[in-house]
Length: 186
View 1 (cartoon, rainbow, N blue to C red):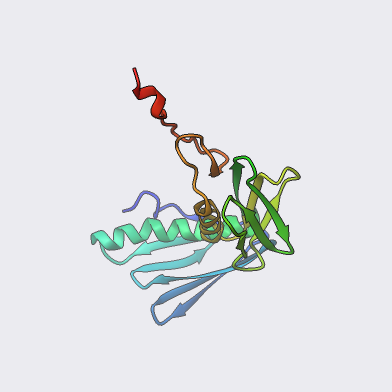
View 2 (view 1 turned 90 degrees about the vertical axis):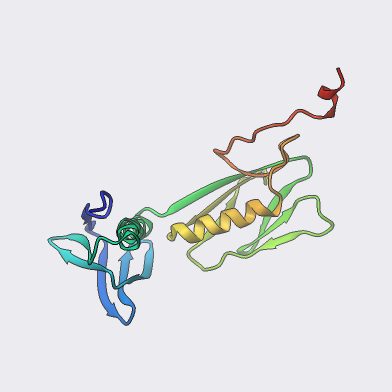
């Protein structure tokens, strides 16, 4: 049995979990103080609610089903964490003249291109915040996948380069620096 999948998920007091049957398997709806999330899971995994806990069981011991077991449990756990605490990714902009600003909910990036790059959050639960220096971004939301995807897209606008480290990087990311041409002349 999966070590992660066999652990029950505790349902907090402020969270309401609904498990519905669907044609492909089961749909789990999680409603909490920050919002509501919904996700569908395959029929090989049986999801049940008992004594304030969510328990996942699998039908067989085939390798694909085993991998689904732990993944399904983690996805439900992340849904519960999202509606109670939320998720956050921080990015830093490094480089002279590189900056960001908000126009309503839209993020406008000046990254050395001939045009500004505009990024719109995919839904109303996902928000982008900028500090007063216009070089530190925070992406927050209730869906871990949406927050991660949006942060990765913003980073891809100008990924950090290895020589001077200019670009957009995650706050906790370490950029491996390369030595320039002058080091080869000895």
